[in-house]
Length: 197
Image (cartoon, rainbow, N blue to C red; front, top):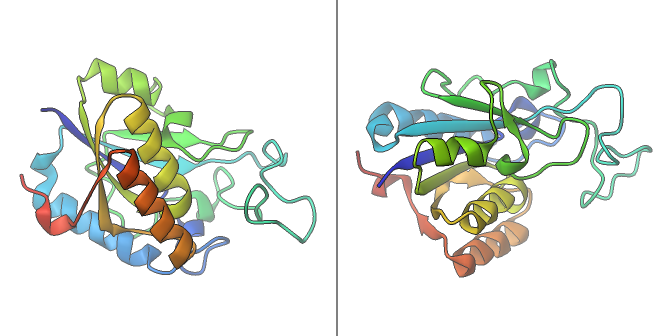
């Protein structure tokens, strides 16, 4: 068993006060740091993704071109490369991260699998190269990027656990639906207290 942790989009724009801040985002950042402080040995590798959108275009229609985003396909401007909003939240300890994944560069991207590592390589290439068979997932937002990343990990043949007290979503109902969908697809829903190592 070779396990990785995926930390999904724990960025300033997705936490309280950000352009698309979700309630509980800062707590997720602190909780992931606490998990790594206590159980870093549970993970052979740690991946962290960030939206890293281009400043000079609408990123394939991802950014609303008017003041009326639909919050389904179009969104307010967020996580523009090199800005404060795109940086990891201060409560997230980054020293344990092995691979920093940037996604959404010039196009919409929800799943970590749509990004590439700053260190080189795609997520699938890195998982295969290191023999990763099991993945735990934490981060933001439950009903969008966490959901997409978990479903893609399952699609790529990995065993997946979603750490339900280390995720936060845009809305309660869609987050509940996303967790149910991930579970039906084969992901295990666990609590941070169940992590050993």
